[in-house]
Length: 118
Image (cartoon, rainbow, N blue to C red; front, side, top):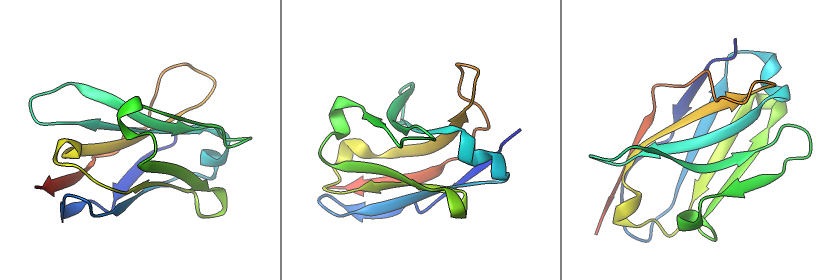
């Protein structure tokens, strides 16, 4: 089973940028879709963005469209989430996961904290 680990979180001010990384343990990562999710304080985990493994098709939650960009480098077994124009409401723990043939997301990482101050 593919496991992933997130990195790149930090504390920034509103309007700043961060790039998160999601690195996989297995080469099979290249055949999985990758998704980014987040959990804000006191809220449920929510979908942020995902990218397919073959064509690299992407999908975004409405609240990040135009500000966040998901990408992947299969040679490095890594996916990225470029976050620009960050807002305080983007604060939360960001997680990545993978999805193969089965419909559910799996291989969840421990998450990386993103804090955006106003």
